[in-house]
Image 1: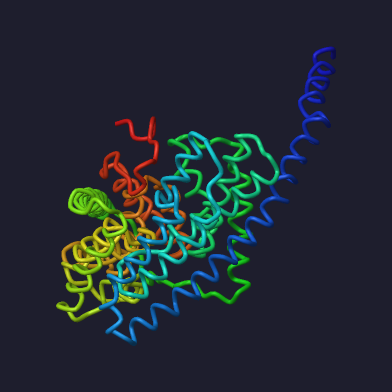
Image 2 (image 1 turned 90 degrees about the vertical axis):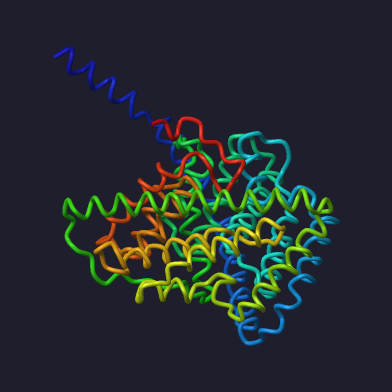
Length: 419
């Protein structure tokens, strides 16, 4: 009897009102902060996506504008040189500030990266959109840490929220956005206090973006076969190839960045010379298929087997564009690379073309960013639960076969890939 009363006493202490109140205050605090951060970040992403659609449509209707890509590069170079400060570091600045806080992420990063990305896409550069949304979200979120004089831990939480909000809203994938922020910044170890704020703001930002009538791209994998042993072997082979594509992308991006630092000492002129080369190549090719986001090509890869060299051309053009100093993200080009590579591999791997494209879509991204869980969730959100086993295994294999590199050079990976 005494033991029963003792156990009840211990249970009462364990579920004390003080603990409940502390947890409730924590939830309310981050919910109240998630609302303005999510609404502002989601609205910023919506405006960015609408503007991006407009400049892309204008470029596709006016091929001649690609000749002015060097002038666009000059505008980006001058703006960042005179007003950018540390903003030119992009996502790497956010990662550095998370791990070693020094000063608030400059708010000017948001309009600067928006301007640079739209100019890049308007004049024919090959880039993405994730970096822009993430940097805008982080710059917005970090304002609140300054205004509210928050602690270092709370400031880290706000940076997580900014990344989560930007990613979730720009792709319409709140689950993946929340986990992407946690994986990207956590050195392979997710801290519990970041989880709730990341998920809260991801959904708020996602719905804020939808409120502006922004439509996200729809993908479909209509047929998913039952998983057999032979399928596992094919997935393993494809996953290794997707990991190789990730390594190639990371290596080429680093290569072009280092080459232009050596050849052109003035950072203002790097995108100018790069723009001359890039616009000349596009004019000689006479086709805009492999520039910009390339979303139509990604969608086509789910329906028809892609040409074998498509993913290589996208790697070349995107790494060159980013390496010489143009702005934008790398993630949508990674979707392009993965989807076209997977689609092309279906020529030899006996799995449905759409399924192979979806596997590559998620897996190349996983290998290049070291965020396999986020990529698995993205695959489920975009393609449905039926393909989860295939996409999950492909992402994990690509993640491990891609080594320790990352498109984010500042990313810390201690303890995450021990094998």
